[in-house]
Length: 88
Image (tube, rainbow, N blue to C red):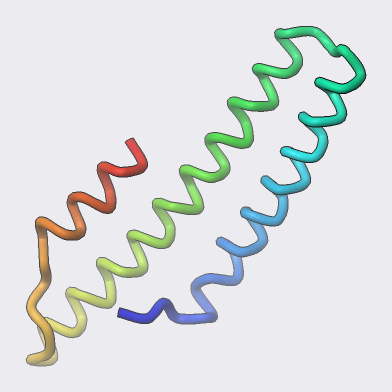
């Protein structure tokens, strides 16, 4: 299953923002910022990465359902479930 490039643009942008947030967290740690500030930013970057992962899985599910209805490869529910749960 290949991911459609047009659907991945927002995912790529979200991951790039998360990378920037991680750089910011590193600077915060190096500067001795408060635990609360660091944890807040860690939670934000974690949520952003989770959302990116869910978007990728949703795209894959759409592809599988479309392929199955077109007579293509059958939807592998167990595989998709494992992918989804890997983000939980």
